[in-house]
Every structure is written in C-alpha cells, then in structure tokens.
Amino acid sequence: MALCFSCTTAVLAQQAKYVFFFIGDGMGLNQVNTTEFYQASVKGNLGTEPLFFASFPYTTFATSNAFNTDVTDSAAAGTALATAQKTRKGMLGMSPDSVAVSSIAEWARNSGKKVGICTTVSIDHATPAAYYAHQINRNMYNAIGHDLAESGFDYFGGADFLQPVGKDSIDLHQYCEEKGYTWAYGYQEAKNKWKDAKKLIMVQTKEATKEHHVELPYVIDREPNDLSLPQIVETGINMLTKDNKKGFFFMIEGGEIDHACHANDAATAIKEIQEMDEAVKLAYEFYKKHPKETLIIVTADHETGGLVPGNGSYALNLQALQYQTCSVERVTKRFENLRRSRKRIVWEDAKEILSECYGLFTHVPVNWEEEAELRTAFEDTFLKGAVEENWYGTNSVLATKGRDILNKKAMVSWASLEHSDGYIPIFAVGVGADQFHGRLDNTDLPKMVAKIAGYKK
Image 1 (cartoon, rainbow, N blue to C red):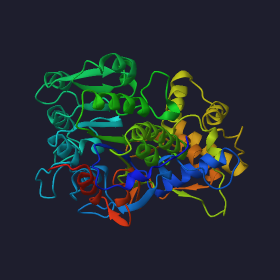
Image 2: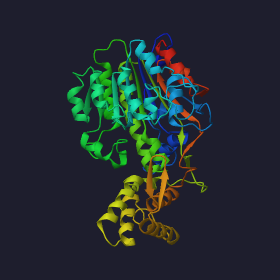
Image 3: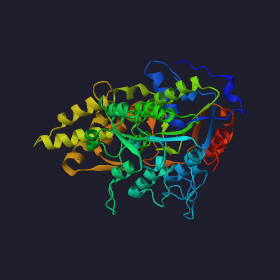
Image 4: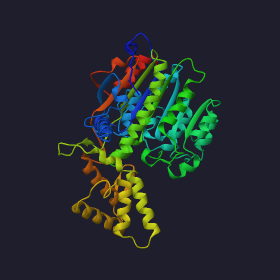
C-alpha cells in the first residue's frame, strides 16, 4: 500500500474527531527495526523494508519508567499512557498513593465520544484494563471485569475474561449483559450482531476459548477460524461509527508481541508486529476518508527482552527465521504430545519436530556442537522434565534450545526474558500529528492526544 500523507494533517485548528491509539505491548525500537530488516531479508535484500506505520510522517520516542522503578511493567506503563499519571508497578488506573485517576478513554466518553478498547490478549489484561479499571493490583481480574462492565464503553474485543466468576458468585458474562452489552463469540457471530448491538464485546468462539483462554493464538499458530487483530479492529470501526456524529477514541493493543518477546521468540514476535501493521492499515483507510478529522498514534508501553538485531558478527541472517512455523509454546506442546503418545522416545522423533517447527537440520544447517547441545536438551526434557519459565509460560528446554540455536543462526540477541528500560517508539499521522516530536515521556501522550481531540476531564 503506497503512503500518501496529506498536508492537512498538520492543521491544528481542526480537532481530531476520530482517534486511533495503537499500543504494541513490548514493542521497543529494536522490535520495529528487526521486523523491517526481516521483511527485506526474506526478499533477498539488504537493509530494511519499512513497516507501514513506521513510515508515518511524524516519529519520535519516549521514556517509560514507572513511579517506583526504572523498568516498568504493563500495568504502570498502561496507566501512564492512559491517565498521564506515573504509578507503581502492578497498579491500574491508580495514583501511587492508591487514589483512582481517570483515563483518556473516560475523558473521551465524558466528552460524548464513543470508546473502543481491544487487544489480542484477554480484555481484562493490564494494558486494556488501564483505560477502564481502577485497582491496586493487576491480578484482581474479577474486580477488573466488574470495572469493564461498568465503564459504559461501546466496544471491547480480544480474549475472554481470565476470572469470569469471583467470590460474589456473579458471572461477568451475565453481568455485562445486564449492563447492556451483547456478546459475540467469534468473527462470524460479530458480523451478525454488531448492527443491532448497542454495546458489543467480541471474543474468541467458545470452542477456541477452551484451548486459548488467556490470549488469542499467536499469528504463527493460528487456525482459520481464530480471531485476528484486523477482524477485531474492523468490527470496532463498525461499532464506533454506527449512529455516531461526535467521534470516537479507539485503543488497540498488539498484546502478544510482549508474550513472544518474554519467550525470546523472534519469529513469533515479528509476525505479531506484522499483523498489528495490517490493523493499522485499516485505521489508515478510515483516515483517508476523514483526513481533516482523524489522528492515528502507534506506540508501545515498554520494551521486552532487550532484543538486538545482531550478535557481534557484523551481519544479519534474519531470513533464517522464515522457516519457523510455530511458536516456542506450540513446540513445547508438540513435545508434550510426543511424550504422551509413545512409551519410548528417541532422538530422531524430537529431531523431526525441530525440523518441522524451526527448520533446523533441513533449511537451517546445524553443526555437530549445536546438535550435541540439542541432544543434551532432549535428555533433560524427556528424562528430567527440565523447563524454562518466563512471565507468561513454561517451555521445555528442548523447545528453548532449538529457539536459541535459530536465534543464533539468524544473528539475533536477547538480554533477558523480562522487560527493559529501552525507549518506546511513537509514530503519528493525522490531525495534530506534528505535535509529536522531540524527546517525550509516556505520560505526555494522553495529555497531547486529549488536547488535540478536545477531551474534557
């Protein structure tokens, strides 16, 4: 898709009637850069092939530290991006002294705008919750779900509640219906319901939710009937523009970029970023129809993993990542299924899975030292049950060793399985986009957007 940015985007006299606020969770500057190098490499080219959103005319960066620590978590970072208030790790929509603070989504609602909140993880997860919830702990999922139902926002999309029934025995699905929400399970059901729904919550089909409750399946693992972020955004635009003359605020999170980076899973993270880029294109198509009234922001809450495209070799081989066909989590499940299906497991059984999932031995050469490492990991996995734990999952050491070797072959480096304090990128196009320049802090973004859009607290 060719970019054609109108000079009208810099006109400050016109307020942003429509605001798209994209957040790539864990998407630091190097996640964007690595994806662009990858896109060029798979075509046999040096350099970068830019992501669509990274070609927006206004680009800068921001700091992301929390109130009580330099390296933030998603709750504190989400709260900063939502409320312009620094807070402590783990707190949602609260000041450091536990006083509820309102968010830009609530300012938009109070200004007569429609509001949509969507994500690729659960709708009660930290980043989306920062826009509607006020809780001292991000793990208070049932209380967060109550806040969602009571928010009055017009649209939610993502994976289902993590804790739908709490100590009060109230089922959040029923409670949301009492508050006027229609549930749509899957894209097809949403297509049939959005026109008649006053407020809509769109999640995975009930069948898909049984296997993927915490999040949507990764793009790399996805089945044809699984929800995608572009489908969620498409439905959101339909809901937010229906019978609406006042405009909207739409927060859209690519939540699984972070989960993949916690697993140091470069290929999976790249595909999540590419899908968010496709969702941004939908927003841009809307912008082209309303260029004097629309603002699109693409940013992140923090960086995850300390990703670096390079490992000291003065070269990259990112095209090796194209042979990975499933996430590290899915590879772990393949090994678990192998364990259950056979009484005796030999190295060749595991080697076949490594070849199918990572391209090792077939498309990506493995030397004898690397195969020895894999064989040791094989024994540790199937004889000792050894695992590697990260914030969002537990993977077998054979799955993670295969990942490590593929990363090394691709010349990708990771600093940790956790967050870093790297700068977060900001890309902007539309009304008031030229205001996003110079060094910023994450708390600046909601204040700037609210001013451009004319929201009243």
